[in-house]
Image: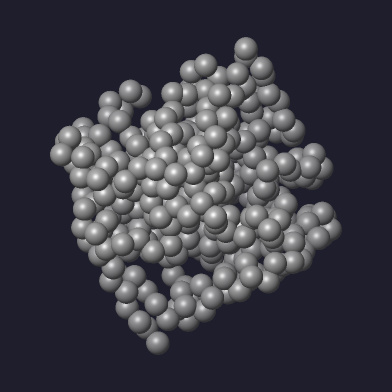
Length: 180
Length: 180
């Protein structure tokens, strides 16, 4: 459990292994880097799982990856267990109008991000439908901005356990320290 | 020219049409939604250009898309013309340490985002190498967070000309107004 005292999981829905591998991998990497505890993917895609676990292996964790999740069953179970559900969508209420209330609620948070067309039922199941502006852009961008605000910029003070590699910020070039 | 008084362009490098179509499309959509004036792509990919221009057609502009750009020549020309170059990379200096200086400089800004391996020369050509945290994540996420901070949250007050569609933010469901 990180400094905010609740669990944050990201649920990626509508993943099509034949065309979404890279975008879904980005969703998972953003989830980890910006403070979520894990990512769940609705399709069974071993290659995306392997890519994400390889990053955890090198750059540290904890961060869980689960594939082949039934999203509606999972959301219902999450809500029955006392968690809340935040669906990121360009049609929702804008982040600045809702983030204080979401951040201060002590409930565990499941953040749902879709691919192109999200079925209607997700809008109804969500406790919050939240927009990062009301223009079409990207679920990867929406997740990053949402998590950055939710966690009050944790991405800039992030610490991971059992990391083998660590970057030293540099004005020109790449400085990487091997820790193990 | 938007409220900040300088031009912002995004240059996407390392685009491989066979595998990066969706991620590069997300880069372009984020550029537009978060306040950039246009996107330049180093490979000649008509399908990505078409997807982006379709969004401009429905949701408004102005926003320019150019493909098949020689990135090194363009960067050199940009600098000779008095513009500055910001390369987003996990190895760079962190955003909070540099954003005030970048924001207050009146120079036109070219934001360079790469795919997996960015050649060394870009690190040297850039006036700024900027990190959104020093963990591996996503150029789409990095671009969104960078532009959001640069433009002081313009994404939430964005206005586009000649839009045919506009969203009314809604707690449940989708409300879209057709303007033309």
